[in-house]
Length: 135
Image (tube, rainbow, N blue to C red):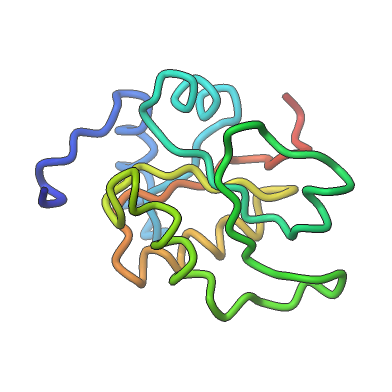
């Protein structure tokens, strides 16, 4: 399936357009409530990019896919991030999967989304505000 054949849910079309206009380098940002609705409707995959330690001590969203952007307490950049993301998304459609990246605040997930876009992922969005945002 080519990128042109992917139909974004209406909830993501505006975010995608804004991202293109602002040249963000990834598909765009999605508010937490909207992200959760998309995941619950089966229209997107939630990818937690926080460290394993964060997931262990703070918690995680059940059913989310875990691919750490950084590891350890020093949050060292995971050099295998893109390969791990691709491997985890294969069952959902690979690089064309609509993926919503989630970190603690929404900052690391932007970096992860940019890296994914450079690697050829076409529909990777950042969840604004992150896991500990004001929802």
